[in-house]
Figure 1 (cartoon, helix red, strand yellow):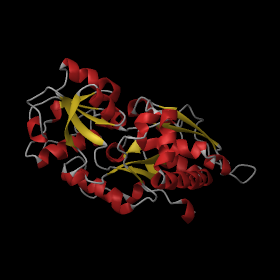
Figure 2 (cartoon, rainbow, N blue to C red):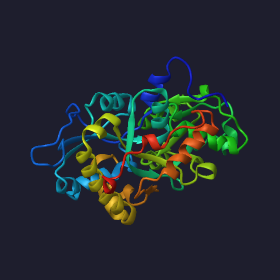
Figure 3 (spheres, rainbow, N blue to C red):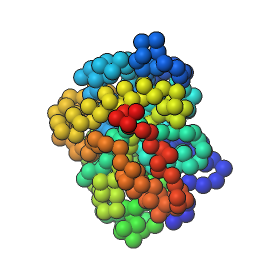
Figure 4 (cartoon, rainbow, N blue to C red):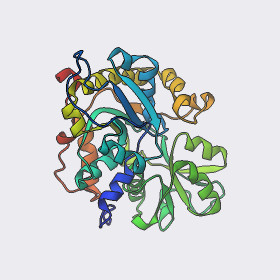
Length: 330
């Protein structure tokens, strides 16, 4: 397959592809130890997209885990990476939830220097699927996607990789020109009007489109991408260097929330309506991924190896360079 990420718009493309959860306007990055010996920077703004991946940040706020660490965390839901990543690089945002595919591409392209401070989410069955209109008899399986227009939330990110890999298993090569980037909330209408033939969606949009009559074509996280690492909590290298106590406090608080999310679905269900448009009834039945409780080099290496396989990054990508020390090691 041709490189999914190439040409003079390389850096702009990867910046636009980074996917987030909630974030707001933060202070510029400033280092230095606080007078009390606590976090160097107590007020943090965290960027997220309104999807289940980001639930641990809401849980940590609700349970007071950040306050226990001397942090005042504000969540702001961003429209996507095009808006939020430049804020992170500029120091207006302190952290964000970023999908690993876009993050690795951004690092490789020199769009910024990033650190993954904690893992967050990995795929599970039926939480990232390909759908089409219910009455579309020409698309029934991934093998029918040849030549079709497919909506993804951003180019050169987890969506394009997932669809490409799913189609390949079915014997189909997806041309990069088949992908149509658009916000997840707009995909249902685009499907109905025929702007696109298929859509790649996550919850709550899987449930919403199913209710509107769309049908599932394929689970994009089965086969080669089964249990694939999706997203982690990201800061800039500059911020982690200048604010090690803040980073460690953030990691400790978030670790408690990640563990809760991993062990108690009800806690996730309670958090989702607070930062997404997922209501309580939908939260109780949607398919959720797995909330990670540790940052694993092996899992990140799997992402790098897959991107190399699909010629999206060269071999030898330095996964370790992206990993921040854990709080326990500081």
